[in-house]
Every structure is written in structure tokens, then in C-alpha cells.
Image 1 (spheres, helix red, strand yellow):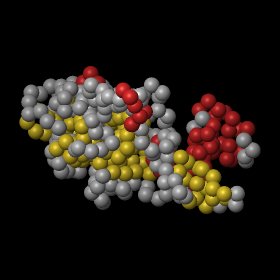
Image 2 (cartoon, helix red, strand yellow; image 1 turned 180 degrees about the vertical axis):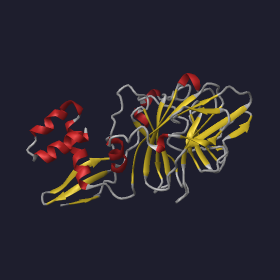
Image 3 (cartoon, one colour; image 1 turned 90 degrees about the vertical axis):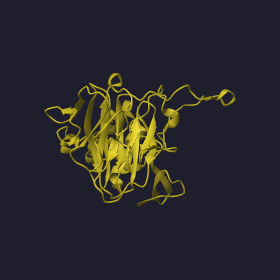
Image 4 (spheres, helix red, strand yellow; image 1 turned 90 degrees about the horizontal axis):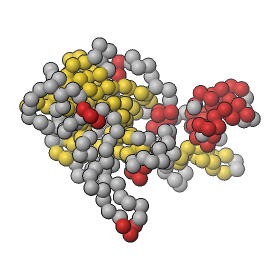
Amino acid sequence: MKAARLQHPSRLYLQTRHGPVVLVSAVSAAHPTPPSSAFLPLAAPTSSRLTLTLNSSPVSPGDRHSRWSSVHHSPHFILSACKQEATRSPAELSSDGARAEMGVRSGLHVWELTWSLKHRGSHAAIGISRQECPLHDSGYKVLVGGDSRSWGWELKTNQLWHGGRRCRSGAANNFRPQSSNSHSTKEAEGPLLIPERVLLVLDADAGTLGYFVDGSFLGVAFRDLPSGVELFPAISSVRGGASIRLRYLNGTTSNPPALMALCGLSICQHLGQQRQDQAEKLPLPPFLQRYLLSCF
């Protein structure tokens, strides 16, 4: 048996003598979107590579990828003892940024950024930057995305920034959900409120950056990121008291996912969380039963 992509680009099939069998559908995300989520209509398909990465156990919270840089941040940002939290001190007419201690040059990587809605203010941006991205400037402005060396998402207006300009296109740009009634479709009065927890999804091999919000992958926000260049999670803020926590969840290499992992993911998705204890009842060797239990 071998894995192959047949006809449908968002599904992975297993070719058997009885015909192709669906292993993973990219439409089904690792973390189901809550039914009440306003982001559900905006959800984009996730690749099997991203789905497996999100389903993998998070790395240790003490991983160095979870730390803000003690050197590369504005003087108005103060880091916690563990360097996982950056807090901006009150400062007039100042835009301030910080970037992670460690960047990546290849692979697919996912970080979690936690930023309270009460302490965002205007110009609150999260994204990816190169090492030389400016992290301090006078006045109030977006720094992450404010030049050609960074790519950012401004959370209040839901606008994407790069090269000092707002981007006119992108999956995460200016979210305004539409009514499901085609006869009375109209845009919401303002952009959606972004919750405090946002996932950065950087595929350094494909040169793309996307965001995961409220259980929904919002698709590719930026393309054509530089290849082979070290890229870092980055933030910028103008709000005194803003506190942003960084957590590296997991990553994978550019190698294709293992067939065993794809099979296990497909079975677990079909069983669902409510029936995970039934993995032991499947007609499989104990080793495979234990493997499936570890997938939940």
C-alpha cells in the first residue's frame, strides 16, 4: 500500500487493492471550531502536515523558542524572569516592539501568543520579522509590518501590514463576516473581535505565514517570505501595561508526514473525543491501540 494524492488536492488517500481510501481530509482541522465561533465561515482547509503538528503534544514550556529576546526589544518592554512574557511600560508618543529569542530558517512552526483584549489599544500587531526589523520609533504606528523586513497583523482593525503599507488582500485581512441569508447579505459594521489567544503558523519552506483563531485556520495571510532567512515571531504595541505571552507549541521538518501518523490521525478524527476510549476495542494489536490512544 502507498499514500498518494488523487484528484482532490485537500485529501490524502491510501491506495489499496480495493481502491483509494481517504486517510486525511484537510478540511477537518485538528481543533474543531466551536459552533458559535464567528470565525467558522472564514475557516480555510488545513494541510495534513499542519493538522498533525497541531495534534502533536506541545513541547516543554521552557523551550528556548518560547522566550522573548533579552536583547532585541524596545527599552520600554520589560521581560519576565522566564522571558516568556513581555510587558510594555507606559510611554508617551512611542511605538515599541519585541521579537523572540530564537528564529527558524526551515520547517513548519506554530507559536501561541496571548494578549489580553483590555490591554491592546491601537496599533497592536503580531507577526514575523527578520532580525534587523526596527523595534522602536517615535509616535504611534505599527512596527511589525511597518517595513519590508516584517509582516504583521494589526488586531484592532484586522488589517495586514507589510512594507509600511496595509495589504489589500489576504485571508486575515479586514474580517467582516457576512449573513448566511443570500437575500439579506450585508457586511457587519466593524471587524471581528480577535480573542486573546492567536496562533502564528509559519511555513518557512513554503514561505507563508497564517493565523489560527478560535479553532479556525484563517488561511495564508502572507506569501513569498524570504527563503533560508532566519525569521522570528514579533510584536509591537503603543499601550502601556500591554503584556504579551509567547509559547512555542510545536514544529516539523520539511519531510512529508509519516504514513503511520496519517493513518492514526484519520482513525482518531473518525472516533472523536467522545469515543476515544473505544480505541482499545478495535481489532488491532495492543501496540497500535496504545499508539491511537496517544494520538488523542
